[in-house]
Image 1 (cartoon, rainbow, N blue to C red):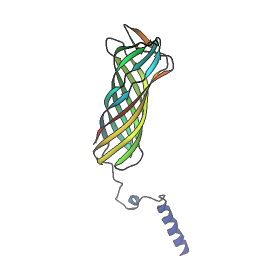
Image 2 (cartoon, rainbow, N blue to C red):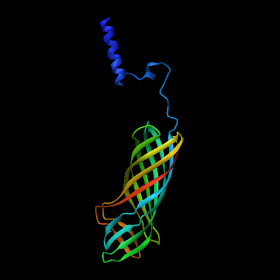
Image 3 (spheres, one colour):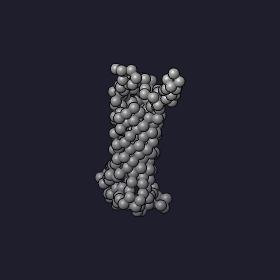
Image 4 (cartoon, rainbow, N blue to C red):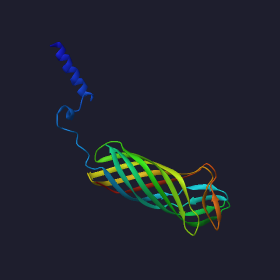
Length: 215
């Protein structure tokens, strides 16, 4: 009798601490509910801050402006998503020669192609998250200038607001880092080549939002 009582108390303590088997596992034929949404599509629009680089001949900068794109998220386990994304920032490339002259060189489309992961921090109708990604940035200038592609990564966070299971509002902020470790050229054309100082990184910030759809 005392041994039985001790066992019952021990089992009750384990269950209270969450160390015992879940209730579903104790009842044959009942499995935990499978998630009904395995994919999320998030088209977005936002505002992106340009950033700049020290180059031979001065300092080049990208203007602030609108950005847009989209992300496709694939659920790997509850709250964890693999994310494939595209982000485009319409901007302009300007050169400051260091003597008070700031000249527009060309219009510039800055395009990010990224693969990363998104981790939701808690469940519920408001789900904060962290996100990180790796990929490349394509700097694509107009006016017959040569562009360049650079390794890049991003990091940020935000929140999903989901009044319904299959759609909601997503708001986020990200920082983007495009690397120029070898002093590579940002662009070349009639104005010459603008070569970044070795070890430089172009840093951009972005705020965006939109409606996401789950399926």
